Length: 442
Image (cartoon, rainbow, N blue to C red):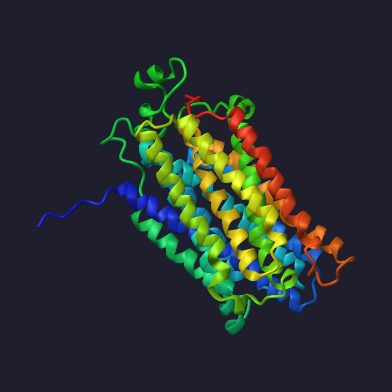
C-alpha cells in the first residue's frame, strides 16, 4: 500500500496554527487570572486597565524589530526564541496584584517576546505557501488565536476556581514548552534548492500580479531577500500599506477590548458568573475560528476561479466583515441578557475574523518579499490599539462608576462598544479607497 506524502508546508501551517492558539490561551488566561486576583485584592478598574495594557507596550516595541529579525535571521529561529522567552517568564513570575513592579516587568517581557511571533509567522508563511493557498493558510493560522481564546474562556475559569490564579501561569508555560519542542523538531527552512522559485521572497511568488515590469525583474534573477535592501521609505509612505495599518488598528482595538473586558462586562454589567455561564462564554471566540476559515476558503475560491480579482476579493470580504461587526458591536449594550450579549459579541468577532481575509492577507499580496516587515509595521498599530483601547476602557468604566457604582446600567458600557463600532465603519472605507491586491514591492 502506497503512503501518501504529507506536504511539509501543511505541517508548517498546522504548527503555526497551534502557535497562535497557545499565545492566545496565554493572553486570555492572564486576563482571567489577574482579574480574579485583582478583585480579591480590591484593585480598582483603572489600575486593572493599566496592568492589562502593559503587555501591549512591550508588544508594540518589538513588532518592527521582529519583522527585521525574521528577515535577517530567519522566521523559524526567531519564532522559537520568542516562545522560549515568554514561556520561561510565565513559569517564573508570581501572580501577586500587590507586587505591581514585578507584574509590569513580567508583562512587558511577555509582550516583547510575543511581539516577534506574528512577523516571524508571516515571514515563514510567505516562504512556504504558494499564492493560491495563502488566504486559507493565513486564515487557518490566525484562527488559532480565536480557538485559543475560546479554549481559555472555557477551561481556565475552572482552573482558577479549583487551583488558584497562579496555576494558569504554570499551565501556559507548560503549553509553551511543548510547542517549542515540536517546532524545534519538525520545522525547517523552505527547500529552495529543490524549488528555485521558492526564494525567501515567497514560494511561487512569480504567480502574483505585479505592476509595471517588476515581474520581469524577479524572473531574471533579482537579488534575494537576504541581500536586498529593505525599502523602508516606500513602505512607510505607501497608501496600500496604510490601508492595512488602519484596519489592523481597528481590528485589534475591538478584539483586545472584548478580550480583556468582556469577562468584566458579563460579571459587572450583566451580573453573571463566568463559571455559571458554562460553554456559552467561549462562543464569540469559537465563532471567530469558524468565520476566519470561511473567509480564507471563500477568498481563495474567488481568486482561483477568477470570479473576482485579488484586489476586489480583499475589499469585498474586508467591507462585509467590518460593517456587520460595527452594527453588532454597537448593539451589545442594548441586550441585557447573557444570550443577547453572547450573540452580539459572537457576530461582531465572527465578522471581524471574516474581514481578516481582506486586510490580514494583504501583506503577502503587496509585499511577499517583505511580508514580515509590513506585518511588523501594521501590527505595531494593532498593538497601539491594545494599549489605547484597554487602558481607555478602564478609565471610561471608572468614570462611569460615579453615576452607577455597580456598572450594571447599559449607559455605563455604551461608549465602550460605540468607539470600536465607529472605527470599523471608518476603516472599511479607508480599505475600499486605498488597498490593492497587486504586488507593489520587489
